[in-house]
Length: 369
Image (tube, rainbow, N blue to C red; front, side):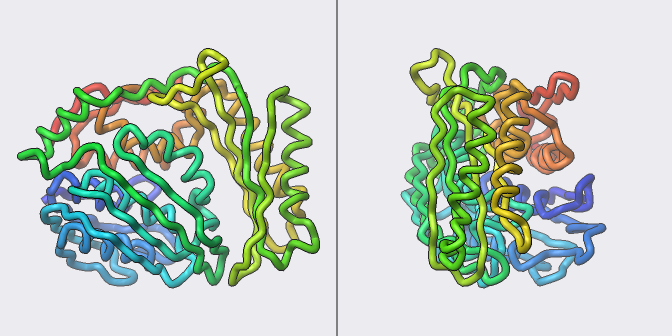
């Protein structure tokens, strides 16, 4: 039984989500204590419980302490199976945070899986769907073919947004006698990560969105125009920001931007695509122009870091870096990133080296616990 301190460093829910994903594919049980220690409302939230419930369907896992507010959890995975899933978080709980637990096991199941998730698509303290789809997913395609589609946006507090995902596996865990054998196969057959140089900025894309009740005020257009005006003063590349309005249960808006780079100014590197992302959410009494300005300035900060991995992608990509090795250079090694390193190494041993001065994270060897 792997013992994990859920109160390590940032003490958020990331440790639990990462542990659930890795436990499921490694097939080793774990016990986590001090879940979300120090938070105003410590313990498991509804979002975490849906992670557990979904994984129980994928591997018939047993769980002790899977209750709202529980500060400890024991999780016992069984053999991974392929099953289509329909999940309704019932609130504006983040869909992308739930996927941190669910997607990794689903990528290595025995046959294609479709997942429908209802919840929050654009919420605080989590990556918006557009960032997930356009910045994170390109880094995961080496493992599986993943197609994600936004069907409806869900803003806080009512949520009820919906996304659909289809995962077509390239590699199946059940084809191997052990995770260690599977892990070694991945390292030998998948190109390692080599995200250490930013290269040439080719274009900037984005999606500016809002609920239909804000259309008369041109909120999405104003967010986009504000971002574009700032970015075009600094970068002489094509800037294309799509405008989108949808019927939603709650009023909301936001904008996600991503910058695309290329090594030779012509072709995008499929093995190591360089995309930096940034976003900003609308709030009551927050002008649309400010939302657009925030997103643009956040993206500028990432581009000017001269690194190929933004501060949010750095911690999201770590489980995949752990599987195939390689190195990444990030704009910032955050406490969130260090927290995820801690969680991963509880299962895989000391596999990361962190050079904080040069903002490098390396994973070239592994020790299965």
